[in-house]
Amino acid sequence: MKYSGVLTKMQTENGSPIQYYLVFENDFLNMNQLLDRAVSISFRKYQCLNCGLDKKIFRMGFCYDCFYLVPQAADWVIRPELSKAHLDVEDRDLEYEKKVQIQPHVVYLANSSSVKVGVTRKSQIPTRWIDQGAHEAIEIVEVPNRYLAGITELALKDHVSDKTNWRAMLKNDIKDEDLADWRSKLEPFIPEEAREYYIANNTETNLEFPVLQYPEKPKSLNLDKTPDFTGVLKGIKGQYLIFEDNTVFNVRSNEGYVVEISVN
Image 1 (cartoon, rainbow, N blue to C red):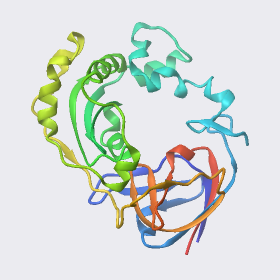
Image 2 (image 1 turned 90 degrees about the horizontal axis):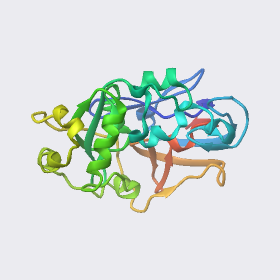
Image 3 (image 1 turned 30 degrees about the vertical axis):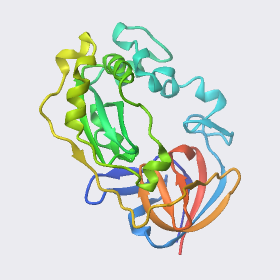
């Protein structure tokens, strides 16, 4: 079986375990069904997710020119405290920015390699946690816009990490944490503007990933250096495909790459 198309992040469906799907323009592939099978990935060309041209991907699936033009790659996406749409202030595209920024956002704690704080739109729960490879997560505050979530995350980053160690996450070198207890400890550091939105009584969410074998020493597949790869798929966690030889492939980091996938 052969499938081809431009990579975008895998779509997910929460379950026991989580279901993963690669969605191409003309193909739809349930990745869970490929576990324990030989999978080949071959790089064919680039296709910028904005302009559609065969130009080298710079970041986030966009070529260099589009990355500095499209609102989906503006600074506020990575640094939500820079959001200004609630003030009617445009960055790159005010209509888009209002649509994304002025909606319920959640500040959360997630445990993927250790406890970290993060921000996501409420509509992206639990997708965001799945994409990060978190096996447990809990909400701290739910606010009406991205700016309030951003300043809350910024304040809490002084007391808990905002990074994921991807190697530890993939090796499953993790331990369970009492996230409700962590939330209580962090409550005093929530900014005054967001304090009324504190969530005190919910329980943590636990997530189960489809992994048969974790890599001992993960090595990342780079399609620019290795355009053709074949390996036995042993697991999927976060946005990573995990292969038997310890090779791991971050689908999201390769958005905008046109590939052919063969299944034996």
